Image (cartoon, rainbow, N blue to C red; front, side, top):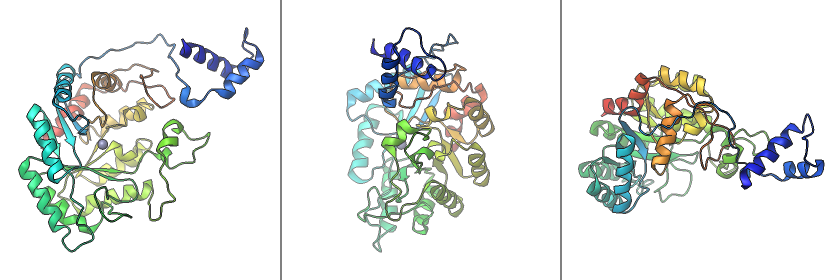
Length: 365
Ligand SMILES: [Zn+2]
């Protein structure tokens, strides 16, 4: 019963900017408004508008961006059950792993179901020595022979891709020339490369009362004081340069390249690089906040967007995503969401849904 009281008090407190709320002592109201933490704010929508409960995606889905969240057979069997119930045909596990760890994950997932596809990482352990990239290519080919169908997720949040690198700082950006032979090998083997650059824009802004994504950015902030770190704009430029330098390689840039706040720019980037695709993973809650602009973008670039989750999948998560992408529901909240803003259905057309759910992924393999 805590939530409704808090909500009522919070609504009352904001209304008190203009009129005083009847039946609430002034003092108590002011105290509540002053003491309510944004992280405790749990509004409940009051709107009597259509509420969809979409139990299955309307077309078969290939989730091209997930990770090895599950590490046991029973958990994987449950995952397959959730996939069946939700019309998810296939899930791509971007393991980021190579060597023994890649083999272990491959055997575990493939042992349960062929509907998991495993992608490997790049072995960066010899970076900085004359053996790089020869060693990295050898390991890439070995993973490919084992069954890896793509590479990912490579991550550069400003300090370079260095997750598995012995050298501490800063690592390689994706436009680095020493990655060219590796990316060329990916193209030769028909392996797309999944790249994550930067983070959403509010992670770079001041953490203050004006920050639009405050509830996430406060915990997820990028520390721009690290020596050698580069910011959002420069990172996007490295991604573009990687596409230009490796025209035969297919790149999947994760999370709308963290540009879902600027579809005009994102569209221009896609126009410039025919070998670049984007995934919508982990940016559903960020993009549905502007449903009309987002729908326009999806419809225009329907051939270039791939569906992904990037979260520990469950029926609850899947259904929320179908609701966001397919329905025209307005102003609703999801259990456990951390943003303070309400969500909206984007209401994509069937033609677009078919492409982003699996049509594009099928075409690219
Ligand atoms: Zn991811």
